[in-house]
Image 1: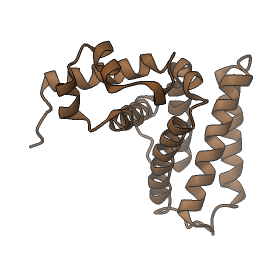
Image 2: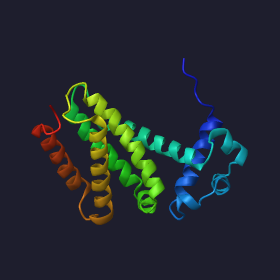
Image 3: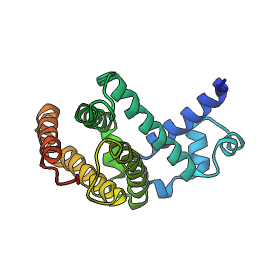
Image 4: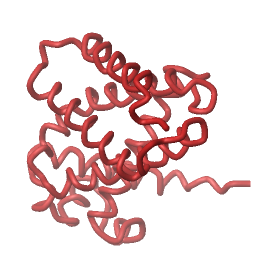
Length: 196
C-alpha cells in the first residue's frame, strides 16, 4: 500500500512551487533567494529545508509537477492512447498536451526564456522524458540512430518550434500550429527516416 503525503506537506510544497513560479515572472531565477521564496509562500525556512535542499531542488520539483500535468492531460485528451497500441495517436495526444501546458504557462515561459540555467533545467527534464518515451517507442520500432541522439534532436526541435510559435507567431491559432506539427510528425513517421 502506497503511503500518501500528509496534506500539510502537500500544501507547503505547492505554495513554495507557486511562489517560485510567481516570482520568476519578474525576477531572474538566479537572483531569487530561498528566504524570498519562503516569505512569498508564507512558509518558514525550516519547513523549506525539510522538503528541499535548495532552490534548484524546488525548481526540479516544479518541473516534475509540470511533467505530471502533461501526463494527466494526455490521459484526458486520449484515454486510450498508448505508445504500445497506437503510437501516432499517443504522439498527437502528447503534442496537444505539451502545447496546452505551454499556453497555460506562457507568461512563465516568456519570463524565463533569457535564463540559461532555467532553460537548461527544463531541457534536461524534457530530454529525459523524451528519452524514456523513445525507449517505449523502441519496443514497437527499431530506430536507425542512438536513442540519446534522437531524444536530443526531438527535444531541441520541439522546444524551438513551440517557443518560436509562442513568441513570434501568436496570430497563428493553436489549431493551425497543431495541424502543422501533426502533419510533420506523420510525415516523419511515414518516411521511415528514423526507423531501421
